[in-house]
Image (cartoon, rainbow, N blue to C red; front, side):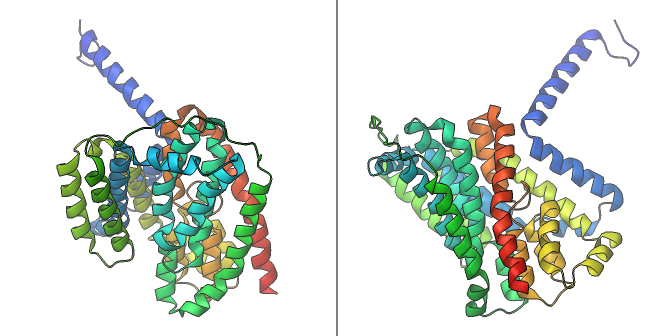
Length: 389
């Protein structure tokens, strides 16, 4: 029987089932959904044209893809499990375990960027905490890992994309850059150690079950390690992105095609949606005029507030056109990485891993993430404002 739209009841049932599946998928990907809703809204104000081609940061997207593929390869051969066994055999309390997991992100992000640190250590932390029977600590530990990566990365020019850009744009010397960010790095480390001091010193008592690296053995581990080094070469712009993509894709395809099924393509789409939004905001004159009037003399506050809406990398790109106070802007966009989930887009990486590991705790994660970010932002903001006078 045909309905008013010319479709029979069977077609409508199939259509309804497809819609339900789509709605369920969108509910499982709230950040992706929001990013593209905002992107489409911005398209109403700035209709698509040839400039859209320049919105996508292909360097970031390609690097993320390759790193996720390499990390998936490590996971499929049981590398993280074996590394977790090694760590657990040498840590004797919950405090020590959490300290290693969190501080690894803090210090490694100075050299391999906050994105890479989180892609590397968050899945590792999820694996280790599960092995230790500490699944209830997953949310606070991953939140602290995210904060650690975002704050540790501010210490060096190569720690994150906004630092690289501002370092070149304002022609900072290495000594000036380090002197500018060192006080905030020290305070950040002190806050993390304070957080760890409140954690339980309960002795870890677990049975470590041996788990061999799966089929492929050691040569897979050597291969993925080599690919990881190749990706780091691309991070510091020694290795061209096209060469990295071709080598990683070909090597993973030859070694284990199942890797490509574990790459989080929704995360890449989320980044793409925000890139479109950010690109369009940069072309809306009232938005630009507002920052032209507001930023001078208020670089730190403006950078922090802008980062909460458009994230700290595009905030650095946008605001650098309105001020000559590079040091103040550098401080602002780095502190601006604390706050909302999109204040630092690297934070989306951790959120995705938690969403996949414990989907029922997405809301809890967002609450804990927001509270901890505010608690860490307050002393750093106080230091920045005090240093101004």
